[in-house]
Amino acid sequence: MNLPLFQPQVAQATRFLFFTGKGGVGKTSLSCATALKLAEAGKRVLLVSTDPASNLDEVLETKLGRQPTAVPGASGLEALNINPVEAAAAYRERLIGPMRGLLPEAALRSMEEQLSGSCTVEIAAFDEFSAFIGDASAAKDYDHVIFDTAPTGHTLRLMSLAKAWDQFLDTNTSGTSCLGPLAGLEKQRHIYEATVQTLADASATTLVLVSRPQVSALREAERTSHELRALGVANQQLVINGLFSSSCQGDAMSLAMQERGRMALEKNAAFIGSLPSSIVPLRSINILGVAGLKVLLGGEDQAADAVKLPVVWSAPPMESLAGLIDRIERSGHGVIMTMGKGGVGKTTVAAAIAVELAQRGHRVHLSTTDPAAHVAQTLGDEVNGLSVSRIDPAAETAAYTAEVLRTQGPMMDEAGRSLLEEDLRSPCTEEIAVFRAFAREVGRGKDGFVVLDTAP
Image (tube, rainbow, N blue to C red):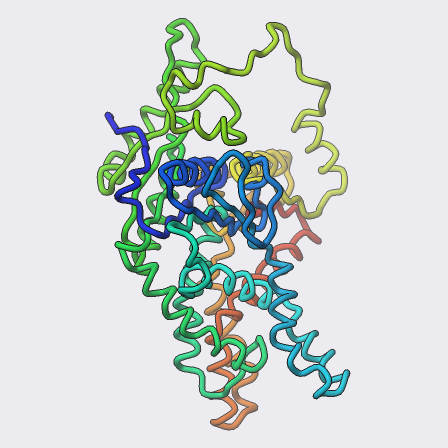
């Protein structure tokens, strides 16, 4: 399959660009390299990370905070991280601050407690994200705003919130929500509306789906493409990063890597051909700093400074996975959670642990808290003694809503039930429902083994 090299075209670049994809595919590297290309062309560029586990600082080799920081060696390029915890603190103060001195301390403490949950953290981070898109004054000094997003599930949630909160504000009649009085949210309403419109505007927003030449990564990119189109984000392109080509005919490992990539592209040819697609070759250096980012989207001649590895090298002594499972097994039951950066192999390790414990005769349940949910695909065939599930946010929200209405509704009059139904339509309900499902899965570890594959 002959695909062109990915080269950002300055004349065709929209004002807003989003880079999203499975964990570990190279979103941060490509978003940084694209930002650098645009800045080198004389554009003023702001690079924003929406990833709670951002490594933008490391790739740019620049200490970043919530305010734009100039990137040394890249004139015209500034970057920042959206910090959810700091955003939540600022959000609480914005709502409570004007009431200090007017309300009793007990009332203020009650408000602070109400605004200390995960819903507040989410809406606060979303507020900062949406401001760059929906508030014309927020990024007026920049020609382009590029978003380096968290892995796919988080990105879908972030973009869906714009429409969800806009619709909730449109239908709410009580003036309250799980975040307290809607006055604080109403002030943001025009920003939410503008955000929804801008995300759907092909002349303003481009969604770059980043993948590796791997079946699972391309499958997730295709699923994400469909879900984002359903949200109205239709101006999409695909970049396949890290395509490996071998020149060592006698090296079985390198030839296998090349063939695996070729087969993945061939298997997903229909999807790849359905939208503008390009490739980035696998580079031989760590893509760090301005110099490394120039190599990523540069020519082959720029990759000459490859890292020289010693001829003889051996790994330090480490326990094998089998040894780890031996230690886990001794307890007879419990919860095992695999965690780490996107793309490091959490799902593979979780599935391997679950299968081995099941084959040793234990009752094992394998589940995932990752919205991308690759557990079933990784596992393949059924294993005796092993059950598999995923926490589906939509299904859990529907079940939670039905249960609340069934248990609480009969005790309310018509007006009270109407208010309850309205409150349950809040996007915050999903947070509660998903956490409840997570707690339920953890609870199964009392009687057997539960292996949880977590989101990055």
